[in-house]
Length: 264
Image 1 (tube, rainbow, N blue to C red):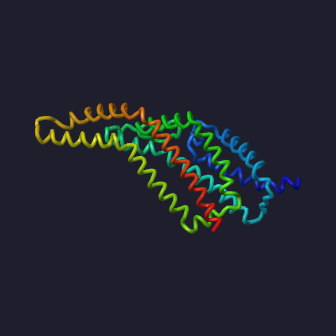
Image 2 (cartoon, rainbow, N blue to C red):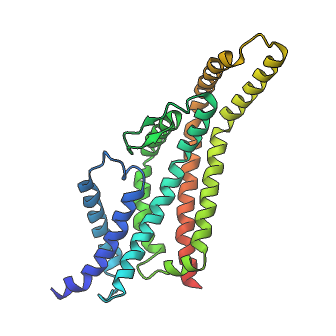
Image 3 (cartoon, rainbow, N blue to C red):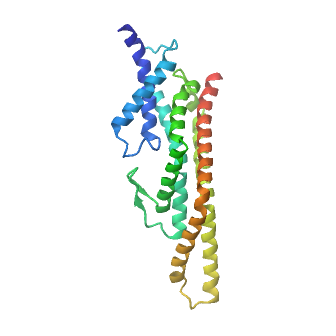
């Protein structure tokens, strides 16, 4: 009983980090994933981490500061899940930019995995991204990164200090900017092609005013956009693998910021 009283606070902190990650991280936060599965997976992962890291002469007193420890662990899990979610939604942002240029902006669909309205091409690319992510065992790498986060950010970490000195805020701002830039780069081929199509239609309107550009432009942009999308599809897997590399690199940077703050 004394050992249970001693080690239960440590296990609870680990469980808070695990479950908060599953609340935000893609794949695990989908509506099709039962909550019982998330809790059960978080419990067993917490048990593995507890048997590996939690028994190494660590003690957590059950006092008023324990509430802050719980809040810190939940915040760590949410930050890690948010970074994963941010770089997963790059393709949806790129798809929204493509839809705007092709003419699909008004035809948003309900994403059954998240339950929210999503752009047509963005939802299509997001499903491809998930399939590629699962095919390369990305979910295994996510779980491994979550479990190995205790090597970088143990329970006695300095997350609040990193937030106070602005390191976490600066990193998140830079990550959001990089994500939007990557979305622009993914959508660039089709967006530039549609821009050149608009320029050509503008010249047509000036040289041949008898043609109704609005009637011609809509089906023309639609056909060109779908044709370019078919040409771009074979190269999406390489783009997605590059996104995954950037994703895990940003996770490593997030963990390194807290570790660097603790060493100073």
